[in-house]
Image 1 (cartoon, rainbow, N blue to C red):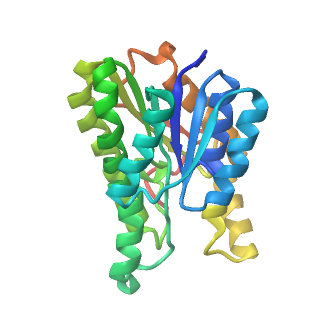
Image 2: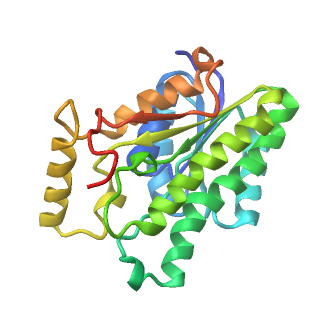
Length: 256
């Protein structure tokens, strides 16, 4: 699976799954633009990519803000003249019960996880249409298959919606040579997963996730990056509008 000289954008690329995908793509020969609100994180990833021998840009971008997304896309086009791959990975997840959910928390989660996918797709797809080629990969979640944790209503709603958006955009963009797919990661230890948890809660969360898989382990960001590489490659050219799971064979997909 070769991405030689392809140009990829990875949102939320400073840590966790996004960082692993950015590094995986660079190792496969791509030039990679990494975006996040936290510039210091993406600058570190940008340096790693350059050390691999590929070109990179680190851009501070809030995917919820159209002007910032459009500016990021313009910077990429000015530097590289093309965008072949977009990974919509920026995400937010707050553990808040429904009856305690504030509008601010709901809007933060849904706007990051869903509106950001729309804005980035709009900004990038028009350039892909001109080239009659593109790969768009949206990061959803195994919760969209039914493995739902209490307190994640905003997160779950947004990740279900990402799947619907993936299928709809694949239908619209397919005639222009653009494949659009989504990945459903299982339980992956990343900074976002643990930001609202104590150490004890995090340990329990991971232990339950391990026991719910057929392979008896939790996943790694690299597990998701391997799948993203396949979906970004030409070997997956006949795959579109799909939600592809990488979750260790979760056995509790109808809830708990």
